Amino acid sequence: MPRLLFVDDFVGSGEQFVRTWQREYDLPGGARNSFEALAELSPATFFYCNAMTTDYGLKRINRFIPEVTVSAGNIIPDRYSLADPASLLWPKAIRADGIALVEAIGRRLGYGADDGSEQDWRGFHKLGLALAFQHSVPDANLPIFFTDRNGWRPLVQRL
Image (cartoon, rainbow, N blue to C red; front, side):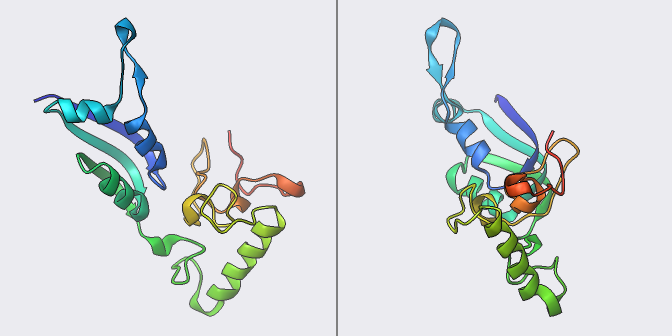
């Protein structure tokens, strides 16, 4: 049975993988096909291996693409969000004030949405992460980590 392996460093919302799965690709001879269509026609087994995934992203992939087995080195729970009311990243005594502070800064920087879009003060899909790699910062992070809007100096540079 054929096997197809996808490898990635990080899964935030799972959006990138879901789109990759559904997107049609050009094939030799002018045909087009998606991994989604291939899965319906083939007895192949699909794996998606990544270093880290959020619990949110894992659940989305499992819901939208149940035929893919996800294997993550680490699963990041919702409580590792700086915007989560039960966040483990803030001491309990200052948690509400910390969340209010990052919300106020995000809104002042022009991230006023509350819809999980890329304009949401909590980052893409409201994940509120505080995670960086040498090469980039996920869009699921709080915008204070990567934006340069309104004269803000990002906490981490995107390369």
